[in-house]
Image (cartoon, rainbow over all chains, first blue to last red; front, side, top):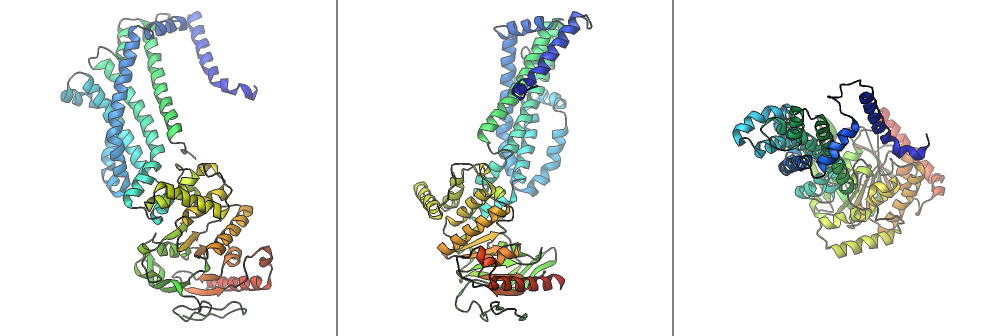
Length: 252
Length: 276
C-alpha cells in the first residue's frame, strides 16, 4: 500500500467490522432477533438522535457526566497540588486514596442512595467521587514528579516557595493532570451509564439501553450502545485536543 | 595547606588564606572557610577553605564523585552545608545576584515559555516591569549577537541553542558570578567547540567571575585562568593552577607549549589523586 493512503488505515477496521456484521446477518449465523442488520441499527441511531428519544437521553448523559467531572476536577486539582507539593503529606494519605481508588465506585451506590436519595444527586456524586480520586492521584503525582532541575533553576533565580509552586510545579503537573482528566471522565461516564440503568432513572443512555432490552427492541438497543460509545470516544478526543492546544510541551 | 610539588614554571601552586601565589593581586570574590558537608555520614568536605579570585574564570576539575558540583551548588545556595561559612566579598548569599547554568538544559528551561520569556523570567521574579524586562532581554540578545529565533519554545531549538538560552537567562540579571555545571557535556563536539567560544566571549566582555565545573581536562585548562584540582572526598585542594595564556584563545592555544605543559601537570596531579 502506498504511504499516501496511510491516513485511511483506521477506516479498514470499521469497514471490516460492518462487512462481518452484514455477513453474520446475511448468512443467519446469529439469530436475527439478537442481531439486527447494520442498516436497521443505523436507521434507529439516526432517527433516535435527530429529534427522537435517544437524542434527549444522550444530552442527559452528557450533562450528568460533564457535571460530575467538573465537580471532581474542581475538588481534586487544587487538593492534588497541595498534597503533591509535600511528598510527606502525600505519603500520609496515599493509602486512603489508593484504597478508595481501588474500591469499585458502584459499591458506593447504596451508601450514596441513603445520603442523597433516588435522583441525579446520587448518580452525579458517585461519578464525581470515582473521578475525583483518579484525578487527585494523577495531579499529585504530576506535582511530585516535577523535574528537580527545573525547581532548582527557579530556586537559584530567587523564586520563593509560592512562586515555585505557581510558576513551575503547577505547569509541570499539567500533562499528568490531563491524563487524570481523561481517565476521570471515562470513569464518570461508566458510572453514570450504570446508574442510569439500575437506580431508578427515567432518562439517559443507560436507561435507553436497559429499556430497549426490556422491550426487545434490538435496533434501538444497539443504537443506544453506539451512541454511548461515540460519547466516550468523543470525550476522550476532546480532552486530547484541549491538551494539545494548552499543554503544547507535553511529551517533548 | 600542604604544598604539592609544582610542575612547570607557569603552574604555581596557590594555597589559600592570603598565601596565594597566583592570585596575590586580586581580592578574593568568594571566601570559603571551614566548610563541612556530609552525605549519610560520608564526608564530602571536611573543614574546607578556598578563595576564589574576582574576575577570573575558574575551572573545577577532579575525580568522579569528589563533589565538584556539590561545591558550586553549596556556593550558589542550592545545597545546604553542615557547617562553615561562604561569603561573597563579605556579603551573604541572599545579598548577591548569581547566575547558574545547569548541565541538563532540557530540564532547566521552562518548556511552557518561549525562549525570550525564559530569558526574561529572572527579571520577572525581581518584579521588573514588563517593558523594561523586554528591553533588557533585547539588549542582552543584541549584545551577544545571538542568531536564534527566540519566539520559539525551547523544545523547538537545538541542544546548543537551548544551552545558549540557559546562559542568557543566567546573564540577564547581570550577576556578580556565573556558575556553570558541566554545561557542554550533553552537546556534540562541534557544538561544544562553538559554545566554548561563546563562553570565552562572554567572559571577555563582562569580566565577571565565572566558575566552571568540567569533566574535560582540555576544556578546563583551555577556558580557565585558574584550574582548581580537587582530591577524592573528603575533598582537599590538590592544586590551584594558574594558566595565564593570552586571550582570546583559539585552536592554536591548544598546541602551545604552555597549554601542553599546564595540561600535563594537571593530569599528573589528577592521576596522583585518583591513585592515592
